[in-house]
Every structure is written in structure tokens, then in C-alpha cells.
Amino acid sequence: MLLPFNRVMRNPTLKTELETKGLGDNYSFGFPMYTVGQCADILIFRPALVPVGEDQLAHIEPCREVARRFNQVYCGVDPQTEDEDYVKAGGLFPIPQGKVGRVARLIGTDGVNKMSKSLNNAIFLTDTFKQIKKKIGGLYTGRQSMTEPGDINNALFQYVRAFIQDQERVAELERRYAAGDNIGDGHIKVEVAEAIDKLREPMRERRKAYEGKDGDEKILSLLREHTRRANDAAEETLYLAKKAMRLDFGPRRLLFE
Image 1 (cartoon, rainbow, N blue to C red):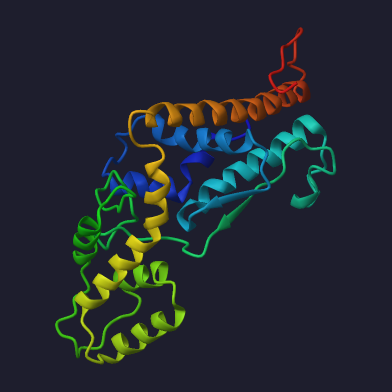
Image 2 (image 1 turned 45 degrees about the vertical axis):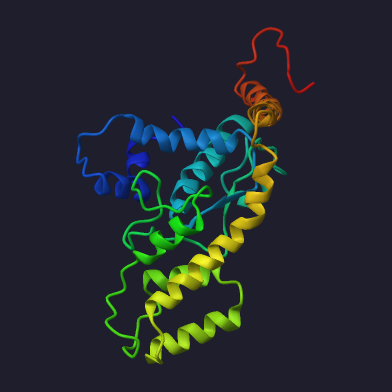
């Protein structure tokens, strides 16, 4: 009722996924339902901002539509209300905004598709430096020599800008690469691999606390605690949503009280 099927199927990210996997019309209902489920996952916490990659912005728009529609139908909010004023006007759900970080989209190590575990083109937190170096080394640029002017918008330079923190060094690499100033792809790839490995160093240190014989229990303890906190927040939203819809029949034990 709040999200028609035809609207779900117009999601450009969903269309791209179906095309990439070559499914045509032969896909399970789980594909379009993923978009609906994502709306529920987001709205259950009633966020104002949702951190996403650029390619996921399209998933936020259905959430915004559902939030507007619910607030209008069940909370009596005027459809002319500005998005930022829906809660002030008596709505249950804020109209969430997508928050895109500095690296809006990162291409995979195949240089074609976005980074994804299922496409086998991802760098993992558990990868060794040798594995990272090998993956970055496989990025294709089409450049034949160190003196050939290169395209600074290619896949390699997406990684340069994403992971090399020294912006003066990034600018220097861009200048020399574009001019074919005696700089090879291999050198840049090693520099990128080193930058990624350095970024992961504190993560590796934190991971050590969860290794060893007590590691599994520590991880399970964290999962239990944060699941409880998430469930409390979700339970409150579910209660308030049912109350707005006049579906709160009978006494209910509220986990958030």
C-alpha cells in the first residue's frame, strides 16, 4: 500500500543488479523484496541521516516515500509539509537524507564493476599486504609506458584519491601521470597498496583483542549487546507505528521501558 510494486521495479540500482547478473525476467521475488526490506531496516530506527555510497542513494528514495506516505495517512501530516518538518508536524518518521562520504563510489579491482564480494573484486580487511598488492596490481589502465600520458580518471586513480591521504602527493601523481612524466603504473600501484595496508594497521591491532580462545565469546557478547539495543529501538518504533495505525490491540510488554 505504501510502496507499489511498479515503483519498486523502477529502482535503477535494482535494474543494474538484474542486468549485471544476466537474470532478465528470471529472478526470484527476493530481488525486489530486498528494496522493501531495506526500507524497513532503515525506517525502524527513524534516522534523519543514512550513510550510503553513491550507488545506494536510489534505495533511500523509496524509504523517503514510505515515510512521507505513512506520516500523511496515519499521522495526519499535511502533504505540503517540508521534509525537514514532518516530525514537528506530528509525523512518526523523519524523512531520511542519504549521506555520501568522501569516497562516493569505489570501483572493484576488476576495474569494471563496483567493489563486491559476490563479484570477487573486493579487498578484504583480512587480506595480507601481499594479497592487496596482487589485487591492486591487476588494475588495468591500458597504458604502455612511463612516458605515455595517462587518464587520471581511470580505476587506478580512483584508488589513489581514495586511499593516499597526502593531498599534495595525490596532486603530484595526477600531474606527472597526465603528462607522462616518467612514472609507471607499477610504482603507483605499490604506493596505493601501501596506503591501504597502513589504513588497515590500527584495524588489525584492534582485531587482536578478539583472537585466541576467548575471541569468539567476546564477539558474541558484543553481538548480543548491540542486538539488544537495536531490538529495543525497533520495538519502540513498531509500537508507535501500530499505535498510529490503531493496531495496538491489548496489553503489550515493551522492551524499551
